Image (tube, rainbow, N blue to C red; front, side):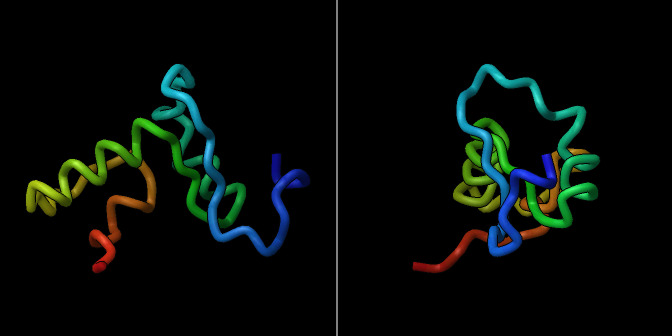
Length: 71
């Protein structure tokens, strides 16, 4: 997969809610050297942040260390 990711990419996104990636997000991020995002993961992150919840979520990727961007 690394060969398919341009060096200029800030992250890798896989769309679609049917792809079960939770078990491999951390390994993919480590191998790619950048965040790996899934549709379900980003929706979960955004819902927690909008609700004001800053809980630590293990094994769901680097995004959970990030605050909600300001407008």
